[in-house]
Structures are given as structure tokens and as C-alpha cells.
Length: 289
Image 1 (tube, rainbow, N blue to C red):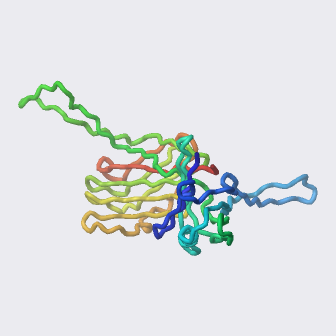
Image 2 (cartoon, helix red, strand yellow):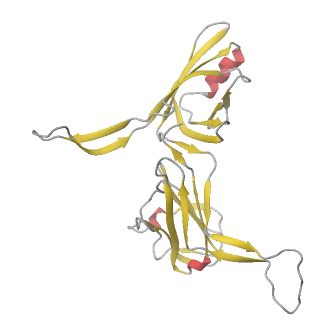
């Protein structure tokens, strides 16, 4: 069974199911995407040559009905309100699949005037036309290996470890989705680190901070490469306030994407990479559902 939940940025929400009374009867464009293809053709050429292609935003049309009551009618109008951004979440319980898509109403609900069952239709515009998993896939370069177990012989003369820190400078992160996707990388400094970086081994694309950028102990740097959400945020331990650090990116930096399948990545720094803890998180992206 599929469940659809509409939640706007003001916190108002509707779930479309039998319990709430709002039933969906038709959904258009859940799986499809439109592509604009630019092409050129010579005078004697057979066919044409495609020069570029662009996946355009999409509009999803929802239709349904509900047993008439004034409160249900008001809930539908007040939640799917024009000018209010929102998120639609789809939960497929049979396939253990939980995804979302962000956007805003392109057309707020049209509702019939019947006194028993009222039908409705609304259109949801999605600037980023792909669905993303609600849960994150994470890669931690730093791991802690446990050494403590029972029975344990305690000694005052022989050193023993409760756990051991293991640093993996190179690791692989899997993108299980249909398409390339952005990600978010977090650099946390245990000690002072100069010019942290993250490299895609296969493409040699890099995210790198300038040589005068220093993370002090306790500072955090977060870089997002998601489409429409590209940010570079530096939070200093002494203030706790996030600030924009775009100006510290080097000219060679690229907001690269994780390709479907395995991606080999490496982190580093100009000085004291050992003082970093690095995590990568991503929402798996699907072309349709």
C-alpha cells in the first residue's frame, strides 16, 4: 500500500488515506520526466545531432475525493495553500520504500460543490523533479574498534585499550539511486587543520579550501553539493554561529556529484589531515516512483 503525506513549511499536513477521508483516485507524472533536447542539422544531414539535453521541472497532478464536511474542505484549502512551499512524502509499505519530493502548489485545490462526496484536484510544481529517500546514506572515514570484552583481566602495569581509532583516508560510498546525486560532507577538526579537501578518485574532481583557511579545534565545515542547495558553511567553536565560507573555496573546486554505483573518495588537508573527522551523507535520488 502506498501512503502520500503533504506537509507545508508552516507545519500543516494531510495524509491521503481512508482514515482521514481524503482518497486519491488519480496521480499524473509520478514516474515521468520531460527532457528538452537541443539539436543541430546540416543541409544534407539525415536526422539531426543532439547537442545538449536538459531535464526540466515537472508538475504532478493529484485528483481525489472525500466525504463532505466543512472541516475537511477547510483543511484541504488551508494546507495546500498557494505560495506556501511544501513536501510530498510517499511511503510504499509493501516494498519498504520511503521517498519525498519538494515543491509548491502550481494550482491550489479545485473542489466541487457536491454535498455528499466532493472531488478535488491540485497541481504540485517540482523545480527539482526527482524523488529522494527520506533516510540518509552515511560514510564515516573514522571508525572506532572495540577492544573491551568479558572476561577481562585488569592490570595496573600492562596498558590495555578500551577501543582504538581507525582512520580510513580512502573509502567507497555507494549511490544506489537511478541518477547522479549531490551530497553533504562534514569536516570536524580535532586539532588545527589547514585547507581540508575531498577528492573523487575516478574523476579527479575536488572540493578544496584555500591555503589560508584553517579549522581550529572544535570547528566544523559543511559543504553541500545538492542541486539548488550548494552551500559552504563554517561553524567556529568559539562562537557557535554558522557563517558563509564560499569565498575560501579554491578556483579548482567543483561541486561534484556521486555517480550511480560505487564512488571512491579520499579526504586530505595541506597540513594535519590526521586532525580531521570526516563524514559524507547523501539522499539517494530516483528519476520516478
